[in-house]
Length: 455
Image (tube, rainbow, N blue to C red; front, side, top):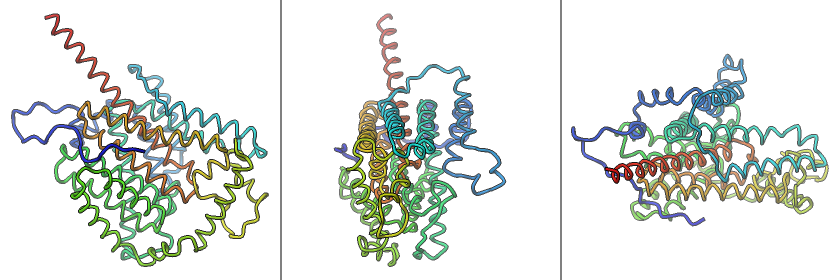
């Protein structure tokens, strides 16, 4: 993918304080982290938006798993259903939330259904349709409700804060053990991010997004907020090291190298990157470094390689629709006698997709990923026209976050975890919100021109 050059962020130059400055716009107040105004905006955006934000909180933070006294209701389905009902009853101006990724999501769902129906193990496939169609529902609820700049900013900010909750916990856990190595890494809340590898993937996504967000709003916030938001990538990188996940560390390093290669301010960025890289190298425990030295030879590597080979053999045998959605764990023990004992999972999202959905599934998956990059490019073009520094920066952040995900997810079976589907939803919301604002600005300019001509 040919990324535009980093380093130039459109937007107004920092202005000196003056009593004659014009009043700040609503978005500038949000960017400046005016907490009271953020609260007022959340209330003003309606109950559907509040409920979809509540969904994200219970999906990512999982308080119901940490505090068992909260685990009395099915919070995630409850908030999703409430968001849907409030969206239906709230009288709002109809907003176009169409996008090419929406169509690809539907196409992927069709492949899942057809593959399940054609599978030798269709019972197992249909019993686990929810593993994709839950994300299908959550995706469309998010892109339908988070449909303007204010909503996107608050929803994305909450996503960052919930990720920071994980990163600070991981960093503090690492610090409490004296920054030493632990074979189990660090753990998150019970659920999607409980295991260290899963936490590491989220940090590989979170790191570039948090940097992009800080760069995007840096002109609007004071030094205390800058310090606070600087803790996001700092603790995220620390948590990656603490996780002992080789895939996550390679992902973060890879994203850093790619960002360095694309920046216009090469020498300045190289100094910062070199300093960060040196700190990372010094901070990585010797035991973690030893894991890289044994890559390809240790039991974990041999287990993955064997599963990949078995997966590729299966893809050649069932090239069109695979063995059936979520049918691999049923198919595997009946057709393979593994030399390396362990999990039946294939430990790679593309092999996971290919074995279960065939090349039909892989094709749609690749199209979804490419569509994400194309959408980010479109956002950058609009952001330049509108001189929107935040969106321009975030579009790069989402590119690098996707790359971080693809690298780290090449070693684990996480296709139907939140990472990809929430990422796609956020990218579509970002695009649709700035596109909507651009159209509104164009309409106002035309109306002003007509009024001027009439006068």
